[in-house]
Image (cartoon, rainbow, N blue to C red; front, side, top):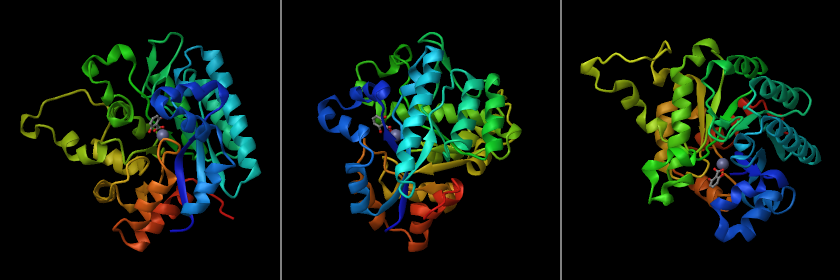
Length: 326
Ligand code: GRE
Ligand code: ZN
């Protein structure tokens, strides 16, 4: 398929590049340059495999792991300025997601506003919880101090991509001796799914009825669990504190979109389509951690209708991010 749009596609600046090295130390001589490059091999890969546009975002955990709040604000701003400059060179091929210093909700709202209004970005991508003040102080965005931020994001009409990061080392007792489960194999999804469910359970979407969230990796495992999350031990009618007005499935189907980033598996994509509807599934690769060629060859051949391929591969993203295609 020509004209695909991909939207979990990362780059790095000098201040954040090292964060990705741990995930690919053995291939760093390739991975590092793939992260730093924008207009070179990335564009050639896109041309070769029918990707018309990438919405670019900073690597992970980057800003979210900078517990010095002032520095987090600076690095976010710097990364967004670099990205805006790159988008300006080829606005027909790139769009931008804002990196945000969520350590300070007011600063995050101000930076998001600047990115949308002044830099022309089409949303934000944030790498899970933020460490603020001290390395162990992890902030999740269902906390009350984030409500004003969410109202700003909602008013700007811009989706928020909740991207994975690893749990803090002090939380990973269950992974001890099994480090292979950290990162993209498992821990990224588990951590991100918990964060997404926290947002839902907190009642955030009762307060922000138009807010839209994007999850990568075909929903970080949530779509396949939706029935169980709401149906748990139904006959026991166990009371639990759940401030939101409706069940999890209600909000997930109304406020969440998922992408195929790093999950090039047709049965999983079909499950997401079945649970959320084809309008809420979008193609993505997860460059440079995944290959544009591999993702595109899978997607172009996947056993779905051509009408669905165009929606997932392109049209849903144009609509959600209000992209102005050339
Ligand atoms: C990602 O951005 O999704 C990612 C990383 C590091 C390793 C693998 C991966 O940031 O998919
Ligand atoms: Zn990613």
